[in-house]
Length: 76
Image 1 (cartoon, one colour):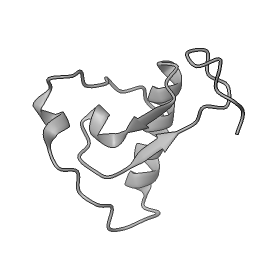
Image 2 (spheres, rainbow, N blue to C red):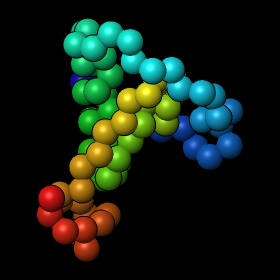
Image 3 (cartoon, helix red, strand yellow):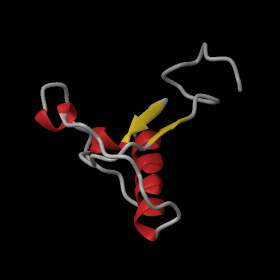
Image 4 (cartoon, helix red, strand yellow):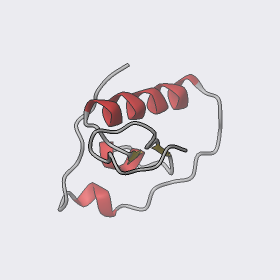
């Protein structure tokens, strides 16, 4: 859906306490997960938390099966 800016070390939003997800399956949550995936893929990342794109929710994704930044990672 969208590649979002990733916050850098020192950004005060990274120190906020992320809130738990209370309702699953909403359009907003699915869009957030898609944005996380798009952002992580665009930056050749292995994982990304919602907090890192400025969304204070306890959502994290990860995938290290084929990542040019981590070629030594064994396939899952």
